[in-house]
Length: 496
Image 1: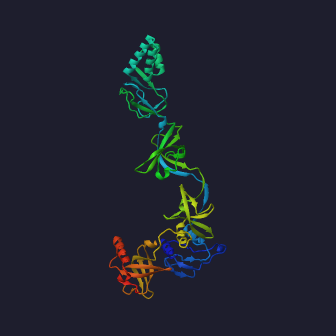
Image 2 (image 1 turned 180 degrees about the vertical axis):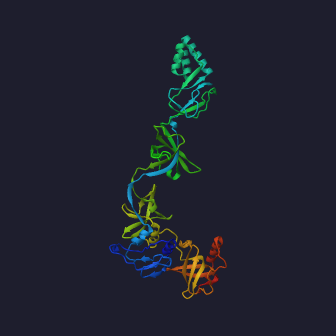
Image 3 (image 1 turned 90 degrees about the horizontal axis):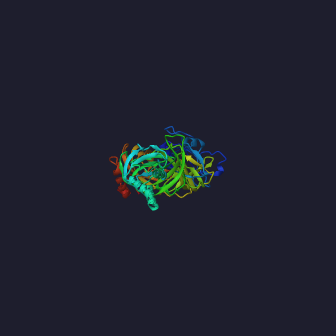
């Protein structure tokens, strides 16, 4: 309790906590006494204020048969602390994975236009990338010597009336991508054309244009692609820890910052088989319908992937969970100002909520704000096992003497932070153990002190005088040396 009150005093908090039982809930509790938030040894029989104007804290009776770790807070203090409650709910939950991605063409619907023969581009209807073309429209005309020769061979086969030669000559024209209507026209007119007209195999937009009018092309040379925007891909990445939650077909919602109010529904189309070794992420391909072609390649998008089957799970607000590294806890609100910390087992995170596997039940009230203060007091004598290191009974610190009371054997000291006890730097009055000589001390003097906790009091058991304040690494080194010494090696120490 004393350490808590000191911490609250340093932070300017107002609260009180003490063990209680359910059988006192029906009647108003009467404080046993009031205690100074800056000095737990300063107790009063009535409400009071300290010299800084802070209200003394009411302390209530501790019941021996109460549940361990239960604490009580008056309604006024709850309001001052900003205590807010939330309920443990059982909801059908889907895991939401939030990430970002970039819009791209649907490569499954991409048409690659290649040259089927060597020749020169006589006419090119495509002037730039992004140009829209319609299926069946002229895209280029090619002058190819091989095509001229193939037409002559076909006419020769027609003249000979040899079926085998005719089929072979017609097959060669088809292999050169000569349309059937042009072959029919050649058969009908018996006139050789110097160029072949190539038409768009599908509707879409031209991408990766690699040829210009008048350019010579080799057989199988890639000229350009025709891509549709009726469906698009979005390439996104998820963290390694999230990859196992995904599967093909998971629903996805996409939004754009520059299209407020609109959203697109899609699905996970493909999970790439390898992770990025540098940033430990998995690439994911998402597919979306785009009937109005609003989505354009390289647009930046935010996506939310919903995973799981929506099984009902106990959930609480993420902000309510106290995470210590070795244990996770919630503060239960038992009613009538009673609170208790309980250990819980956490499940996955769902946005601003987290699943609870064990420790609480649906309908329980929990604290979602100011729970850390309540947990600190409840954990002092709670019935769950603490996995943290044992609090040392005595510590070393450095401080400056503010005032000396020889009659009462007390020192007012401004000491440095004490991490072993989670104390901040502050000014505090200590009692001095019998046998420790303080008659030669002076105000403003820097001391190296060993402090021991004895119940609710903190007593100086050893004093080592410093000529000048020690800081940083030097203090840590001096501290290690002091801890290795016997008390008899200090300049001033408690006599046996």
